[in-house]
Amino acid sequence: MVHSPSWFNDQTIVAVSVPFLITFFLLPVVLRVARAKDITARVNSRTSHTGKVPLMGGLAIFTGFYIPALLFLPNMAAQGIKEMIAGSIIVIMLGIKDDIIGITPIKKLAGQTIAALILIFLGDVRFTDLHGFLGFNEIGYGWSIFITFITIVGITNCYNLIDGVDGLAAGLGSLSLLNLAVWFYLTGNETLMLACLMLFASLIAFIPFNLRNHDRKIFLGDTGSMTLGFILSFMIIRFNQTNIGITAPYDLISAPAVSIAIAFVPVFDTLRVTLLRLLKQKSPFHADKTHLHHKLLALGLNHGQTSLILILLNEAFILFAFLSQYIGTTLLLITLLISGALVFLLPNAILRSRKEDTGSSLINNN
Image (cartoon, rainbow, N blue to C red):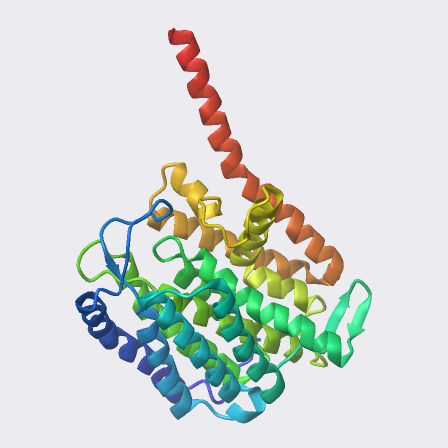
C-alpha cells in the first residue's frame, strides 16, 4: 500500500500551485527587463541558438520558489532549509553578475565556496555515512566536510555546464526533484517533499518559455543553472542522510550510488568532458562542443529531441539504480559508470561511422 500522510491535502496543492503561478507571471517581467537592458546570450562558436535571447530566467524561478517556501514549508530549521536559501541567494548573486558582465572561474568558485560553507557549518548539512562505499560507513568530521564540499560545488557546476540546450537543465532538474519528492513522500518527510515539489512547479512554469522560438523565449542563465545545481546538491545530501536508520521497505542500501543516478547525465557528462580536456592538456574550463548534447545536435536532432532523450536516459539510470540498489554501493556505482561510458560513446560511434561512410562515398564517386 502506498504511504498517504495526512498532510498530502488541499493545502499541499495550494503550496505547490503558488510557485508555478508566481514564476509564470514573473517570467514576462524579467524577460522584458533583460531585453531592455540587453542582458542576453550572444551567439558564438559554441552556442546553438540564434539571435539575442534574454538571460536570468532563474531569477523568476527562484523568486517563485522562495516566497511560498518561506510561507508554507514546516520545520525548516531542522532540515537546513533556511541555510540552503541563504547559500543559494549567494549563488544567485554570482549568477546575476555572470549573466550581466561576466565573472572569472576563480571568483565564481570563491562565491560557491562561501555558499557551501554556510550550508555545511551553519546548517550542519553534510554526509556522515558512505553506506558501505569501498567498505566505509560512518566517516570522520574532516572527511565529512571535504566530501560534502566537493559534492555541493561539483553538482552546482554540473548543472551550470549541462545548460547548453533548450529545456535540458530545467528538464533534468525537474526530473531529479520529482524522483526525490516521491521518495521523501514515501518516507514521510513533509518538508523536503514539499520543497522539491515547489521548485519542480517553478521549473515547469519556466520550461515553455525556454522552448519557445520567438520574442518570449528566455534562458535560465547562470543565475538559474548554478542555483538549481546548488539546491539539488542540498536535496541529494539530505536524501543520503535520511536513508540512515530508516526501516524497510523504503530504506536504500546504496544511497550514494542512487544519488549519482538521480543527477547522472549532468554529473557523468561533466566528469567525461573534464577528463577529455585534461587528456588534451587543456583547462577544465575550456569551452568546446564535447558535451553529449552537442553530439546529439551533430546527429541532426533538434533541441527538444535532444533534451527529451537525455531526460529519458537519466530516468532510466534512476530506475535502474533504485531496482539494483541491493547489490551494494560500490558495485552499483561501478555498474553505473561502465553503463554510462558505453551509452555516452554511442553518439561518437555513430558520428564516426557517418564520416567513414561519407569518405567512402567520395572515394567511390571519384
